[in-house]
Image 1 (tube, rainbow, N blue to C red):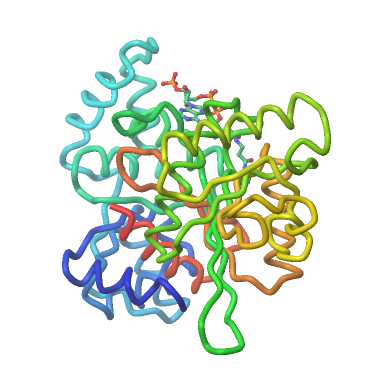
Image 2: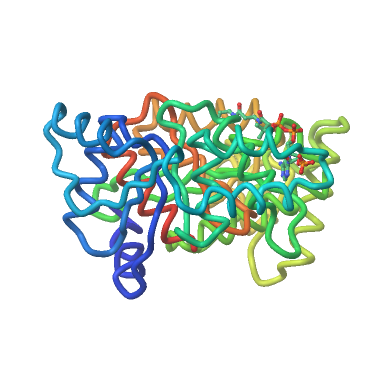
Length: 327
Ligand SMILES: CC(C)(COP(=O)(O)OP(=O)(O)OC[C@H]1O[C@@H](n2cnc3c(N)ncnc32)[C@H](O)[C@@H]1OP(=O)(O)O)[C@@H](O)C(=O)NCCC(=O)NCCS
């Protein structure tokens, strides 16, 4: 798979620890056993050790050597609750509320990252996106210079000549309808993520209009965001607004947007909202035979990612590597 070799090499040079919040889930256990067999990414499973070992035995996975941390038997719980209260002091969180949240696997795992027990976190095999992402938004927060947490998907399709085709799409998972400035931040983070996967980004801001062919506030929003992003990143080809056909088909691009360096060759797509983004990446995945990795959260202080509840063990393994390598 394109990109994974590089990501694993990166982790081998600097091995990392990742928190997996759903320690008893069989897909998490299978992925953990594969990670434990390698030496580049160390899983920390959250949950009751007896229950986790029972579940591992039942599903036949060897998780010997994994670190297990139990929220109900954690030496540093008082320290964790103190830190939680400090982090949420402006929100009027009481100590009782903090204590309750710190005993929930999603908040507990996020606090483990905050306290430096691990570099990253992967959750969401059973939790909803909101329940995985919210603790990160509240406790890990955006990195310096960023105002927004957003997300992208990396799409990979094996090519006929053995080379893989790799695309990036953002934001298909977090922000419902980003403003012009939010789109600029989403684009810049999506570009950075695409580069981690070896993509040389050619960035298309997508719309129902190409280079002024249609009218409307959403057209202006995409065009203005493209112009702003391009001004801030003059060495990267960035254009828009444009329709998807103009973005990917050289023939259509010739007719609709002949002056564009991006049109016809785009590999990094910025969607106007979560509806188009989420539908768009799923069309590529289900009808275009692309493998979809994500949503990869962008803009956080530490990498935290959300699995789909329908995920497979192999997707957990891949997402764990992606998450850890983003640190
Ligand atoms: C991500 C999401 C869950 C956040 O929702 P929420 O928890 O209800 O958000 P809230 O407005 O209550 O905000 C919670 C905190 O997160 C912060 N926050 C919310 N969205 C944020 C963003 N995009 N970037 C940075 N911080 C954000 C808020 O400022 C708030 O922080 P505070 O408590 O310190 O003030 C919500 O945007 C969402 O549901 N998005 C769609 C997810 C989805 O269904 N995706 C499709 C499947 S992939």
